[in-house]
Image (cartoon, rainbow, N blue to C red; front, side, top):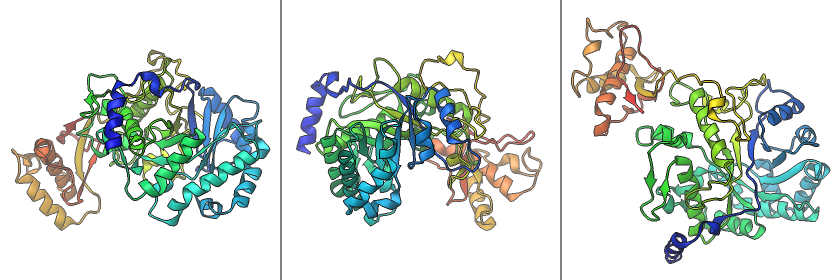
Amino acid sequence: MAFFTAFIALFLLASPATFSYGEMQPKMGVCYGELGNNLPSPEKSIQLIQKLNAKRIKIYGTNPKILKSIQGTDLQISIMVPNQLISAIYNNQTLADDWVKTNVVPFYPQSKIRYLLVGNEILSSQPNSTWFQLVLAIRKIRNAVKKYGLNKVKVGTPLAMDVLESSYPPSNGTFRSDVSETVIEPLLHFLNRTKSFFFVDVYTYFAWASLPLQISLDYALLQPTNITYTDPVTGLLYTNLLDQMLDAHVFAMTRLGYPNIRLFVAETGWPSGGDPNQIGANIHNAATYNRNVVKKFMAKPPYGTPARPYTVIPSMIFALYNENQKPGQSTERNFGLLYPNGSNVYPIDLSGKSRDSEYPPLPNPSSNRRLWCVAVKGANLRAMGGAMSYACSQGNRTCDPIQPGGKCFNPNSLAVHASYAFSSYWAQMWKAGATCFFDGLAFMTSKDPSFGSCKFPSIDI
């Protein structure tokens, strides 16, 4: 703690150049996932990537067709060792050598392989032995890279935001106690020694969607507004959520004695669609966020972050396509810049040269920046009835419209009535601390449940 306190004092006196890495040029990339059964060929995909004016791509493996397709282009590529190979590689240098010899050497340097990532968000899985094998596997892969003279290839591993146990305020950024000493410190030592990057997947969407009433949507979208946040320890002024999240990693690394390891945004993005309970997932917000990300990271001179002003931060937007075979909620299948037929979900120029005025108008989200609280489908009817009775007993005339003769009485359905009651109660009481939960019987939605003359109360965001 004494070291960290001393660093804060020095940091506040440091010049911006302290954290500047002038040798890098701003280049936006795109993550090229392949979890779809209707995606264009690698050759066609590379053409589409070039049309987007991307300069980097990230793939989640070593597909030789993709590696061959980028030959003769100026695209830099990031490739990946699969998670399932880490346990085999960590104590077997021969296997690491063979993997690099088979998957990297035949394509280098004709394919501009610049980053070799070992695993993908390993520390986000349930605790397992792979966590503690990760850094040893990274070292083995690095040894193989050196053995074959792949001098332009940096080795690392991408981690998600959940590697932090504290990120607010940014100056309190702290790595999780279950991995800080055993995994993160050795990883940072390796990255610092090899002049590699701390690769991080950062999504303001998920942070905002978990606290939509506490975090401004515009702040999460990187929209220019008068909304700011001042870190109470450093006095640094933040104008968007992404900078806060990135600087939390900077301070977490500093806390462990590594203040100068470069950041690389290995993934960021915003979904253009989702399930009814996945708020804010629409084309308008996705286009707004990703265009603002491009403007931020392609700026000259670079913006950096408040903790590292004027610093180039390499970045990748997730993802190239809407991938129909990705598991999970619908948002997972709607992060793409392109539909599988190659058409734009929304226009975007990853060079950063296009102005907002050059893009066609975006469709307005149907929610008009409002949220409702509705009943979960298939919930226990008896429990729902009890929750509805509680909601109706609170506030001012909370449930009048669902009484007989009211505008929302028909259809005379418990689910419809409960949804109205939940929304009405929440809209009246949220400022007093009420939530949209009701013991798991309700969820927030940005899809307006109103019908006919029945208008459900909502909360503005």
